[in-house]
Amino acid sequence: MNPDQPTHQQQHPATDAQADPPARLPGPLQDIDSTVSEQASRRWWDQDADDYHDEHGEFLGAARPGGEFRWCPEGLTEAEAGLLGPVEGRTVLEVGCGSAPCARWLTAHGAHVIGLDLSREMLRHGLRAIAGDDSPTPLIQATAEALPFANDSFDIAFSSFGAIPFVADSARVMAEVARVLRPGGRWVFSINHPMRWMFPDDPGPAGLTVSIPYFSRTPYRETDDDGHVTYVEHHRTIGDRVREIGAAGLILDDIVEPEWPDGFTETWGQWSPLRGSYFPGTAIFCSHKPG
Ligand SMILES: C[S@@+](CC[C@H](N)C(=O)[O-])C[C@H]1O[C@@H](n2cnc3c(N)ncnc32)[C@H](O)[C@@H]1O
Image: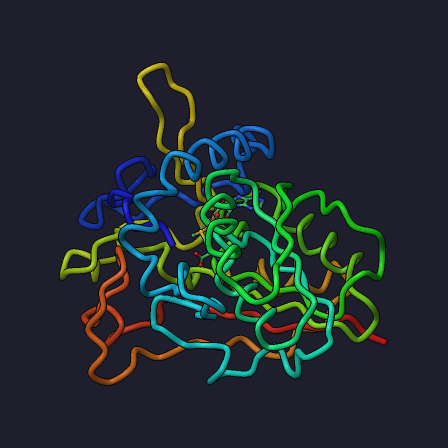
């Protein structure tokens, strides 16, 4: 959930909806690989951590004792949705936890949780909040593409808009999660709904007009004056996501598309009541490891 992101059609090819349809674009481009993506994301989220929490901390429950668990800007909570199943006594990994309000909420509900994130500054916000909790939640700085845990370590893994949109090799994340899950364990992650890729990141009417090919996996990037990548998001279609989950040996159980709640007026970046009244903004993939 990046609130500060400018309209993302600016650096995509073939964005003029009035022009001829764009030529079919190639598959994932390799110019923004895992290393470049990690460097950009670490720097971006370190620099943005304070602003992110100023703007969204209250909604996320980031400083609230015992945290809060929201799956998406539509506000859906784990208390309502129960997508993780029973959590008391379970070992849980949060991937891309940021300041870990979700992990802390699970700790408060009796789970044994570890939060993992790439950004030291996002984690630092979490450490401050954890100091006010009854039970601590361990946090670790690492990348989702190489989880520093033994095989079969967790009953549940999840991510709420953490890591997956930002990694170059999300298939590798799926494989890593499958490796550290115990047989029967769940893996649930929320991301921007893939169909949102087609539209500019604008909460208003401009965000209702298709301008980017759904099938373009060319990453969205922002660069500085020297051409260094400073922000990146990677797109996968719904089918890509389903295949990555299957290739990791996981079973897909559901894709939850939270609807915009009646009367809910909170806008988060490109997520708004207007757009939410027409199409989904979030997809939550629910899967499990056989066994
Ligand atoms: C939109 S924030 C979401 C954080 C938290 N789940 C929340 O709802 O506030 C995305 C998070 O993903 C983390 N992230 C990005 N790339 C990552 C990677 N390769 N490995 C682990 N975390 C990553 C960022 O540092 C950031 O904290």
